[in-house]
Length: 145
Image (spheres, one colour):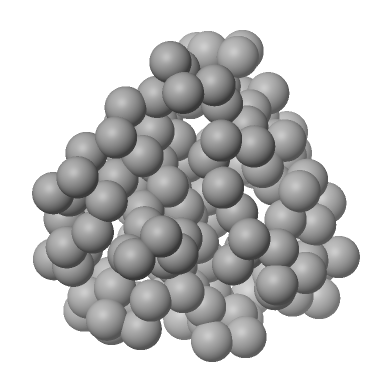
């Protein structure tokens, strides 16, 4: 199962070569300034060389990005995979804080998980399509507003 310490050690260079992503030095994530590494689909957000947020979205048409996203989720210790049916677990069941509709047929479920925000985007058909994980308290508060 998920290991909280793995997120703090998360590094984009463990999954992508430096020529496979861009670095944006002056990047804002939920109104918090830091450094963005990656791209629109898979984004690592850093403050002072520490990852504070991970966002995975809009990758369903790209087998390479799906594979990379699932490598990241596996590294973090999650059993679920992008592009696969999502099954409810003890940690991720109907105990979400709230949900909203996003991008057509996707419902995002917001979980307060051990002081972190985890957002799962699941289609009406039950397929996991997006994932977001945030540890920064200011970003969490901004996302939940």
